[in-house]
Length: 233
Length: 385
Image (cartoon, rainbow over all chains, first blue to last red; front, side, top):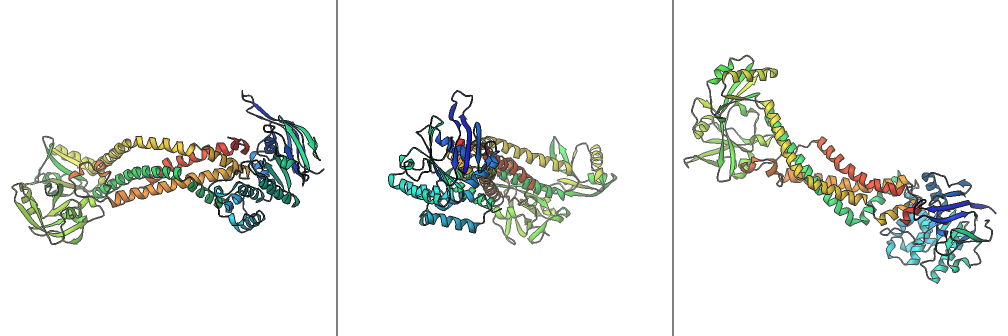
């Protein structure tokens, strides 16, 4: 298997040494297959969101090694991690984490603001993504005026604007009804067909029971309890 | 550069998204700058005008003292003083104050002589015969008088002295002429009922400026009841008076400044949960720490700079268009009886820079530093709060 992400004995401890110390992830060693759809499955508090954050360079492990695209990112300084986040990952958050008061177009283009990309190509990229996600007519609408499903599509659009190789989604269907969850999965399948690696943290059977999920990594109490598919443990 | 422009645009849109917070800070910031700048503008305008006035004044003005009060000076002193080595022109001056009960203002009445050589007329001419006068712009305004119109002064005997206005003054320094009424020498002596062998004071020019103190000492030795007033002393005294008054006013506003600083620190430094989460989101989607700091810098700079310049403009309008209506009674002191005074727009750039560094720089720092703490943390922990 061609692994795009590998973790070795990764642990994450919050508030280490304090009375409220929490060991969120313990000794996780997994491999995420390039071009596949991988689900991190587990109940609330199992550590799947923390693990997703670790492999997405959103935080650093307390122990262990994380290799992304052949590069060990566990010990990288913050500014290098930012570059990895920008170039490699697109995030879809559980709460969408869109910025209220901004329009759809502004929210989607936000990751590109600090880059040197010219306005013309940036706008072209935006228009292409909005069209793909059927959001073209919403481009100038403020984010708070959209439905939950539309907001999620905007979050997906924002995750795609940097043209990342890997999409990370945290509980993407938590706030969606069945129809919208199915719509989301269709979008994810389409992205996967385009060659994107997808990693989803979820406890929604609507997702992990789908036949096209390549790998399922089950977690409980911060540790990996089972792996189905091609992921090593 | 493209990226930086977009961060600046985003900073401005962020300010608009938090309108209430930012406009309330900007409004208070502007008012504070307006008050402080008004004090600085007005003090500087007074000092500059006073220095301009003193630039043309003689090196020594000799007054006669009696019982610690200013008295008329005998003209015969001139003969003795002119014998002192180094003394140049000596001129007796005839002038006095006149309280005009009609307008509740005090005018300075002065005899037309060669001391007036630096005063240019806006229109008309100097008085040449009895019954003529030239007046300052302030007097003309308060008496609603124009060229060639009648102008009367009331003697202590309740008798009116009618004069014709032959000229209205203007100079770069309105302090010099604003309250001035110039008569012929004979007319003024008669009006004040002065003895013919006395003048109000005597001006003495000294050929070598380094000998002024020596000459003054010799005059004092010859006439112990006289008081030689040196130009350098006057400059120093006026400087101290205006600095002291400005200091008093600034002290009065100290409480307001302190309250503002606390307010600014609270508003700028206490980033809300929303702002904190926004920083986390920006970091998560690929913004670098330096990008977040640039964003916060531009937010702080936009509020501080717009407030600073708004405050400066308000102060300029207040001081130079509305004649510092709010501050004049405090800074000008005895001016209750002074004709309306229009300060000339002199601005000390150094003071503006000092004010800038004491207000704008701390505000921008207060905006950036707390965000920096959030920006250097992992986005995950920032978003979790």
